[in-house]
Image 1 (tube, one colour):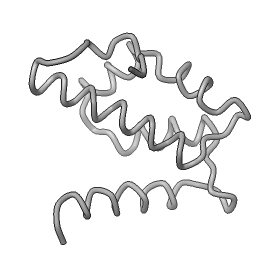
Image 2 (cartoon, rainbow, N blue to C red; image 1 turned 60 degrees about the vertical axis):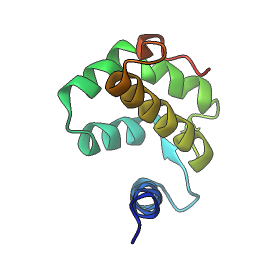
Image 3 (cartoon, rainbow, N blue to C red; image 1 turned 45 degrees about the horizontal axis):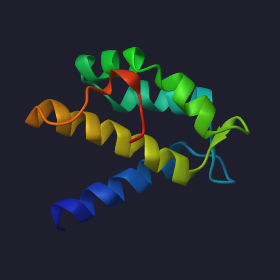
Length: 98
């Protein structure tokens, strides 16, 4: 399987594994999943500094995170990794969505 295809499949599989029958995660379930599925201490610190809990509150105004909202969060984390690796772009400390 091609790398991008595998990454997409893994993201979908992970969400389905943690989501309830309606395809949603509570904020607590999301934070538990991120704690378990992200091993990198530096990335975890970035998430805390970026106040990603507040970001998830804005995203899931109903108290739950659907796959679309989860995808935006994963995109944000990927963007942070890209900025760190290349030195390009803004620091992710502000948890902005530009």
